[in-house]
Amino acid sequence: MNNKKIVFVGLSGGVDSGTSAAILKERGYGVVGVFIKIWQPEFIECTWREDRLDAIRIAASLDIPFREIDLSHEYKKEVVDSMVSDYERGITPNPDILCNEKIKFGVFAQWAFDHGADLIATGHYARTATIDGKTALLRGADTEKDQSYFLYRIGERELARTLFPIGDLCKSQVRERARTFGLPVAQKPDSQGLCFVGDVSMRDFLARYITLKEGTVLDTKGNKIGTHDGAVLYTIGQRHGFTVNGAEARKGIHYVVKLSIEDNTIMVSLDRGAAAVGKADLSDLHWISEVPRPSLHTHAQSRYREKPFAITVHSSDDRFTAVFDEPHLISPGQSLVLYDGERVLGGGVIEMSH
Image (cartoon, rainbow, N blue to C red; front, side):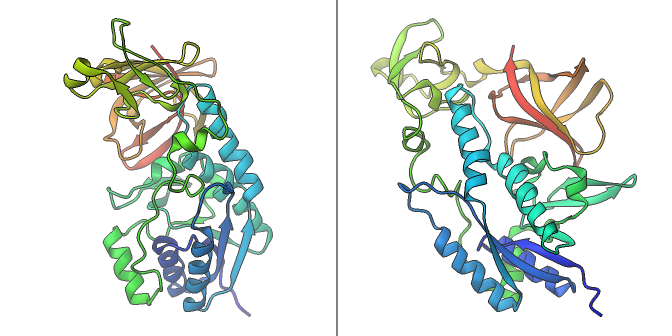
């Protein structure tokens, strides 16, 4: 009788997920490799066919079963449509976070458990640990690759049935293990950005779904100093993608510090810190274990790879406000993820600043 635990590993065709599958097989699990097909528009050349072939090669080299699931419809609805809608409203979303919550640890996880999996695994640089009897999400050991920021919306129940086999490794160690395992993707370069956007700019992608109209660039005094491609394309702190005229351009690099979707204008400043705020309202809160006490002093990140900064989260009547110890640059639509040391507590979407 075979008592091996069955793990369905999301095989993207890359070195991280491939090495994860190899490590799990080495540890004695019954490993099944699964390629998840996501949506891609017809006007973009995406590498999914090559990635699928690489996933098949990985499964073959490890002598593990290979399966695939087409989540194109779910991905289009839950990730792409949501992203476009947010841009239309003038906020900058984070589709990677949505993909993890809705697709990988949502539809895929449920499908895997329905089809015989005891556990699922991915090639994320993150870790789990049991703390006070509950499954906690921790940062990956490689500080340069740590992906816990993108995983804060996973529930504790899902985390308890999830493995992150490379969470304790650095990228260089993953490459080394891949070579040792003889994986055909050991030297494959890391993928860049979102597959469905491919090699085109976000501007060209969004132009297919949103009517973009050229608008005015203003300085902080309200003077017209340039033009831009459409206010929905920009985010606070951005330093490119718009034109500043003549003498003003020669003064130095300008940063977006304010934008108005209604007026289709963006305001720029030579001082990036001009957009820094002292607090922000949070919506769509998600806590991995329990909801913290009404006033929580901890650290947070409002962007991937950002240095954590000190904040206090106040809650009242289901409303949450983050107060920063020092003014900070944030963008509505992005996630503010809360950490207690290496442990991810949860987080929310930045709703508005003051």
